[in-house]
Structures are given as structure tokens and as C-alpha cells.
Length: 415
Image (tube, rainbow, N blue to C red; front, side):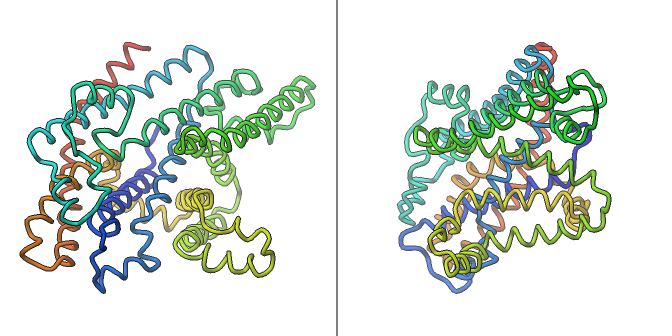
């Protein structure tokens, strides 16, 4: 997009903050054995508070948004496709280099306290991180292959990268060979060309043939999509996340169609209801309302209506679409005090896990003999959140600017 959408940026930031809260709760409460019990903490396990650590909803949302934005890129030649793929790789590689360098240094300065806090809280999940000295080869491999060996949550970035590449390939093939608007300068993106092509009325027989081939191409892609969705995860359980990125294409097409509809007020009201509906279904409604009804009326298919990652992906799409089309929600997400931090989403995601494994873990170990665990948990969460925002802002103003300069140089060189 030529102009950044502040509401969309803020939504991404909220997604990243929920991922932070999920990992914080997993490290210091949910995955501890035995789990520390307290009336205040136990309330977090009841809706709607469960949304505060619903990483699936937010992670899938992050993938969908990436697919939506990638589908806005117009690629009309093989050279442009190759350039887009290489630039996308460097877009990930540069921050990977900086954050992995930081994590490498933090390990050898003794900042990570995962081993000690895992033993104290009996948390095997936390114990699996930073439990051995990383080597230079591990550092280079994690950086070049976009792996999460040095910064755990970054494991999903390679799927985000390859998913985006697939969006580029789909867009290139459709726009290059099957779109009647390829040569037109009035259509800036593939998503827009698909919508416009479906509404275009002409008596030119060649246009009809081209449109038919485009439809057959989309059908073939859709069949391939579901076939690979079934088989590929057998080889890699997380590969389905590339399919979620691809799902951003029809989501962007749907948004464009909604933007072209006449009655903006009705659209905004329906979109607002869609936001609340998606949140309700995700945190409780699917299993406690929809499933019982289906189970009573059609028990033979009721198992398909139990919450799973596919339903979660649908609810995430509903949340994104509703948030971008609802005037009240967009106004809230664009509110200056919130929007001022909207560009910190990626630094927050990069830095939150090293922060949890260093500062948050050290804080817990230091105060554990001195106050109740519930107080430690709440105070630590607050201080960790504030510190995360501060260092994310510092990172964005230093390393972030350096990353942009390096990426700009790479882009100029490749172009």
C-alpha cells in the first residue's frame, strides 16, 4: 500500500502483544507443573479473558494480513517476480541477523535464566530454550534459514516467507497469463484486477475466453490448495500456515468488494457486529453454543463443529475484515495514543521472547522468596510489558532504521 493503514498496523501490534501475553502466561503459569493457583489468576481461564492469551487467533491473523498485503503487489514479469522474492527474503534476513546476534550475545553474558526458572517452576517448555551454548554455525544457520533456534517464536517466519512467495507466484501467473487487465495501468493490484474482471461486461469474444481461463485457473489453484492442505502437513505439521497466508488473497478480494458497495453505514454496522461475533465464537461461542445446537440437530456431523484451527482461522479472518470495515473499530484503532505505537508490531514480536527469558525470568527468581507468586506474576507482567514497549521503540529508532537503510541499499542494487 502506498499509504500505511494505521488501523491495520495497530491491529498487528495488538496481535503481537497477545502473543507476548500468551508466552508470558505459558512460561510463568499455564505450563508450570503444578500450576500456581490463585483466585485472580484462575479468572483468566474464563471467557472473555481467554482472548488475552489466544495466540492461535492472533498468529493466524498475522499470516492472513501478510497474505492480504502481498496480494496487493503487482508483478508483471519473471524478473519482477524474482526481485520480489529476493527482496522478501532480505526483508526477513536483516532483522533475523540483528535479533540472533543479540540473543547470541545475551546467552554468553548469562542474561538468559531459562534453566533456573524452569527448574524452580517445573516448566519443561521453558527448559527447552537456551539450555546449551549456541555455536557460530547454529547462529549462521538460524539466520540464513530463518529458523527460530536463537529466538523461539521466530520459527513461524519461514512459513510466512514461503507463503508470501506462493502469493507472489499465484499473482504473477494470473496477472501475466489470465488477466485481461495485465496491460492496464488503471488496475494497481492483482486482487483489484480479479474483482474488476468479474464485474467487467464486454462483447469481445477474446475477453470471454480469457475470463474463462482465469476462472479455470482459480479453480485449479483451489483444488491444489485443498489437496496440499491435506497432504503437506503430514511431512511438516506447521506447513498449513503457508495456506493461511494464501487465504489472504480472497480476504483482500472480499475487502475490495465491500469497499465498492454503496451503503457505507450499513456496511459499518454489519462489520462491527462481525467483530463481536468473531470474538464471541472464538472465546466460547463455538464450543458452548454452536456445537451443542449442531450436536442436537445433526449429531453425525457435529464433530466438525468443535473448535479447531480451521474455525480459528475463519474467526481471525472475520475479525480482520470487520475491524477494517467498521467505522467505530477503525476509529479506535486509529486513535492517536494507540496509533503512535502501531509501527512497533514487528520489534515487539522480535524482542518479546528474549525479554521473557531474561528480565522476566530473573525478576521471578529474585522475588520468589520475598512475596506471593500472584503478586510477582502481575507485577512482572506489567513491568515486562512496559519494558517491552520501551526497548521495541529503542530498537525501531536504532536497529530498525539501520535495517531500512540496508534493505534500501539491497533493493537499489537488485533493481
